[in-house]
Length: 292
Image (cartoon, rainbow, N blue to C red):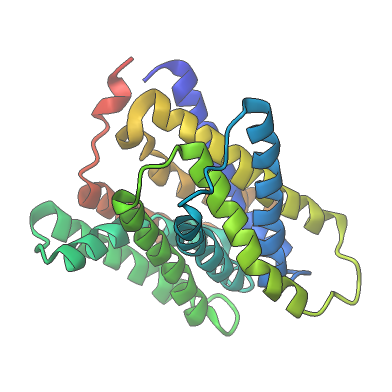
């Protein structure tokens, strides 16, 4: 992997890791539906500007249903579940739960294709379950009421990403930029009724909340998509998968630095078990990183 690609990989991991503290800040003044509507709406506008500058079409003909399905499972439902969980769960816990998405994708594929899970894949799933159990068992004793539901919501979000991953592998082949652009607009339209249904906050949100909203929309969705697709084009999807292992590290770090979240032994141990499990489930090796 070249130095520019390595730098993009770390930058993308840092950006996506920041999405969890941003959500923690955003839900202090906005409902989950309002926060996520702003997130996908700003990201859609950002990618629309990029599409105009890069002359990238949206490819709506014949793909509208695909965009709404992908937008629902890749944006609407997981983002909403994470926003709900962020009201009580720390950013570090959410970041680690997010890393279980590849394991869910493998389990879903095994069920739908009726193929068994054996060897390292099965052991990886067990490690992941052990890591989540360790985190959930201890974290729920330290966070306010509703901690158990927050953990389930975080796992539900990762499960949605697993569905989206499996769906994308069998969906029609669409240019990556149009795929991201289209699913974000579909997500924005899906969330619009919920946005207007929720009552407007009695007081205007603080500047920090709006900065978190802008960070979620422009940085963690718009810019992150561009970085990710550039990485896939430069080093391939297998090497780009490395981001899965780095996002929890940055999520824990940002939570510690900016939200004063404690990093206990169970956080580190649970994170390591989940990441090891994910590596074994996906068959990931670090070999691609030694290539230039």
